[in-house]
Amino acid sequence: MSEKPQAALKTKAEEDGLVFSGRFAGGIRDDIQRRLPWYGSDWVDGARGGLKTFSASLYMFFGCLAPGIAFGAFFDQHSGGQSGVVEYLVTQSISGIIFAIISGQPLVILRPTGPITVFISQLYTISASMGVPFLAAQAWTGIFVGSYMIIISVTDTCALVRQCSRFTQDLFGFFVSVIFVFMGTSNLVDKFVLKGDKYSAPHQMILTLCTLYFAFKLAGFGSTRFFSKKIRETVSDFAIPLAVILGTVAANLMTVSLEPLPVPEKFGPTQPRPWLADICPADSCGTAVGIGVVAAIPLVLLFFIDQNVTMLLTQHADHNLKKGSAFHWNFFILGCFNITFPLFGCPYVTGSLPHSPQFVKSLSSIEVVCEDGVERSKMKVIENRVAPLLVNVLVLAALPIIGELKKVPTAVICDALFLFMGLSGLPGNELFERLKLIFTEEKLYPSLKWTKEDVPYKQMHVFTIIQACFVGLLFGVSRSPIALAFPVFLVITIPVRMLLHKLTFGFLTQDQVMILDYAKPGSLLPEVEKADIELDAVEVQMLQPIENPTDKESDAAYAAAVKALPDKFGKPDEESLGPFKEQYQQKDGAAKMCCLGKLI
Image (cartoon, rainbow, N blue to C red; front, top):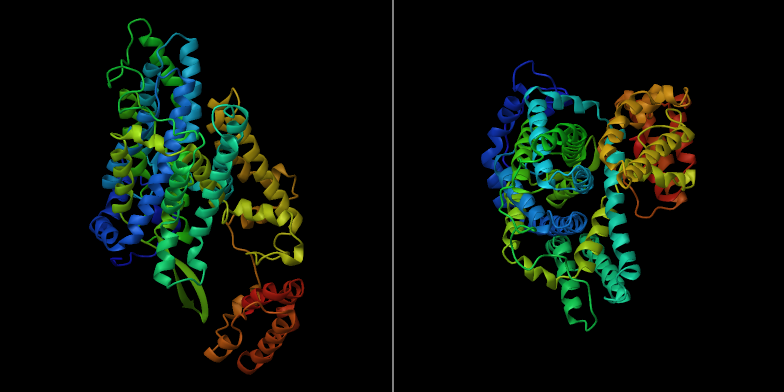
């Protein structure tokens, strides 16, 4: 990757441009200034990425194609053919191509998402009840929501997203993964309950589970011992395309009837009409404008949270991205898209979860570096524009031959891939990881970033349960008659997090909430950390983790470490080692060895 001179040290908010500049469109100008020096390297790095760039593009092509077809078919059925698969894929492909070329952070994947589909389904119901053509109501809503987004962009209001903490980010990411798992599971159930008389449900379920199994096995192939490292990494990179191809080939060899993808026979508007929608019907133009003014308010809240949380998770510190973000400029581009596409009867578009963070991970490799005598794994991402451009060029190329996609069964693309996207998006999500701890024996807990004194386990579990309840609330609202208010409930999580210590009547203190929300570091072994201990090479080697250590081996390493400390640093007092000893004695085997690493 190309290197650029390092800027002066700034706060995290300043680095991301999440500050009020005090100038008209100052945030946009700063975003462009920050990203423009990298523009050439975005293309060069993508070309140098080679197979990694290509494999990530194929993975995300299938990842975008499946929900585009599924959501488009869903809306087609629920709107009497007002809009459907073609319109969804047109929005996906054209917006994605333009975004890859001109955006500030091109690794954000744009799509007409599930929440957008829920929103426009409710908008269709409202417009139909008021005697307003849906396409007119959708266009005017787009005009106003796009205008609101542009105003937000030029006034630097995206800076407010810095108030959107990990509390909201994690529960929203978890919610999106749950939605994908739910969709994949409900599709399987529908095959038995609603479509069992037309298609072979048992064969489709077996095909789904086999495709899902192969996807996970191939994705984890890099950690096996087969073949060379290069071959293992290549197989892992192409896991999803290989699983889809295997599933499709197996499906076409079967003699039973399988449900094909619900795509039209040829390219064209779902409803026979000109591409440019009539946005001002003679008998209901004023009503359409009125619907647009009001409906755009909850929609802009959704876009503000959805797009900016997607940006935050794409720019997550763990991804170790180097080229900077562009919150304001990206949001401005989305505002222009959401004015334009509905004029042609196409749906709205926004940043997509879990696609965007998963796309970043698919473009990454893990590097092992040595910091302060300790080996650490860091992610190195090929930050480029070639991969997102290729994703959307492939989606666009599928449109002229869209009828041929019927050869791919829904069991492979919609069911298995939905389940894979949802399940693979859960590991690493802080809410998911803490939910597992509720059902885990305490002495088997993994290493946490705070001590039990900082945050007792009861308080940690209460914090986790509150987050999980919001996920349940969002899920219930999204599937209820008040789904239009879904964005409002999502925004409410921000002040709830700020006031959580008061809402729990002090059971959770403000410091505990901040530590759990990563707004404040825990005081893990403060005495040892303050000593700024630097072990020499011999001591570091002596304390290297043992593969599958027993308690006895870990205890021996602990004794050696304590014995080595006085020779170099003076005898540590019992008070300094106290917090460490307590944690150490609660663990066993490999967990003890990980705990021992903290002493270094």
